[in-house]
Length: 296
Image 1 (cartoon, rainbow, N blue to C red):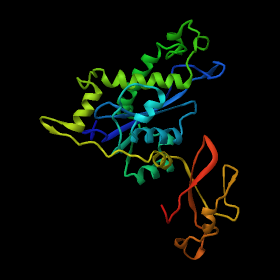
Image 2 (cartoon, rainbow, N blue to C red):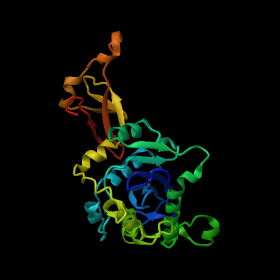
Image 3 (cartoon, rainbow, N blue to C red):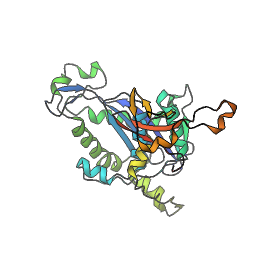
């Protein structure tokens, strides 16, 4: 792929519904198929991050996939109970996607710009530009078709198999299986295009070989909450006496008191009210996050 000449030079992201019906954690009743958003390093074919959810693809799933890709994963693997190594972290140079609206959102463009990440969209009419991520998702599908509750890829493959009746895994149980497959199977298995494993290729790109210098490891990012927050959705609002209204909910804190009815000095003679950035997690609207333009 043009420009994919070292680890994290180009990362491709895409989504797919998983061919598997999952059950709830309390009554083990079938509740549906999850979606997965995956990021793959085109140089090494290493999976650098993903996000799994029952929600349809949106900027939140893209943002959480990107933040998962950037962050170290030891703590995350430990919380899942997965024994393995996933030595991928750091900021990618370019993100390559298709033209879906969640990849062209204002929030994604702003978040990537803040981190100096370039976004490239797949040229229309050239689906083969997404061949690497499509092949990876196909590999996932083949492995998932051996799990209880699989829907297979189509009715012809499924035949008389009762997917809902056979469903047995919760979202967390499936995620543990998926993470184990990624770090202990996919990353270590021979890749026919590379003639080595993705992990070997990634390590060569980082550490170098006899004939080529490596790019080295990127600094580890320790502020996990800041990275996740930076890739959350945001809105711009003026600050009123009551605070701000987001998703029909009022929010107030003393930290925004000084910005009530603040005038935008760049608006000219019109003297419009200044708008501020508020970030939020759509899964938890109990609070929102105010970006202070002075404190940054």
